[in-house]
Structures are given as C-alpha cells and as structure tokens.
Length: 189
Image (cartoon, rainbow, N blue to C red; front, top):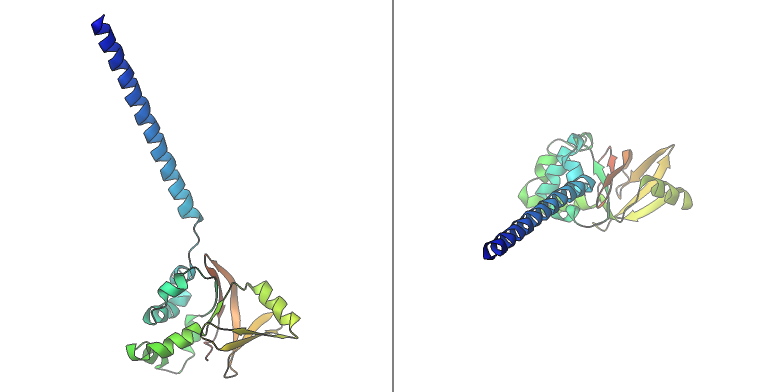
C-alpha cells in the first residue's frame, strides 16, 4: 500500500513536471513569435531610413558629424527636407570638407537643422497649405529660420532665406518618427 502511494505520488509529480515544461515551452514559443512580429512591424526612424538609402550618404555623414543622430532618432515627429548626395555635390568645392571639421560643428548643425521642421507634413498637406495660403506657405525650421513652400506645376519648391530654390524630388518617405522629402539642392539659412 505504501509502495502504491509512493508510485502514485511519483506519477503525479512526473505528470506535473511534464505539463509544466510543456506550458513553459509553449510560452517561450509565443514570446519568440511576438518578438518577431514586433520587429517586422517596427518602421525605421528618420536616421535609419537615411542610413539605408545610398542617396543620403553625405547627409548621414553630416548628421553624425553634427551629433544629431540621437535627436533625429528621437520621438519627433519631424519633417526632414533631406538633400541628396547630388544636392551636396552642387555646393562649391571644399564646402562639405570644411563643414565636417570639428571646429565648424555649430555651423553644420545650423545648416542641417534648417532642413528640419517640427511635426509631420506629408506632401498632400504641404500642397493643401500652399493652395490655402495664396500659393506660398511659410514654415519655421528647427533652426529657427524660415522656408517658403510653393508650387511649380506639380512640384513642391522650397525657397530659403537667401532666395535660393530647391525642388522636392521624392516625397513622403515614411519613418516611425516623421517623414522625409528628398530635395535636389541644399537650402541655406
């Protein structure tokens, strides 16, 4: 009788351990699946989008030199008028190298933040604002300066404070913390 009770107790214990391990394994599998789903659903932030696009390699180098990676990876939302590599190539020879020097970090930061607006402004909203404001919509940049958006046919144009114009060549590149519009010319405060 005693042996039978011991065997019954042992059998119950094995069953409990087996069931417990089976449930633990199921929970582990569920957690792994949930992690993968979250990874797939997570959109890259503005910096990650720029890093993943070879047309923005000069911009990424400048953002790193200006110590703006953390800021532009932050919560936002931001609208970035991002100069392409070709836009930076239009600057006078030596300008990029000069701006990337540590002693010019403040100037570089000012130029880069002049390309950033607080808030998320997709192309349709920008076009609507231009039309609602008699053909010109002024926005204040993170740097504190102004950009004026207007239309040239179907293209959105930006005019900087010096009167230079830049065309949006790619609109609405989505990021988790805002939107990027690629521009063909660097705008200057």
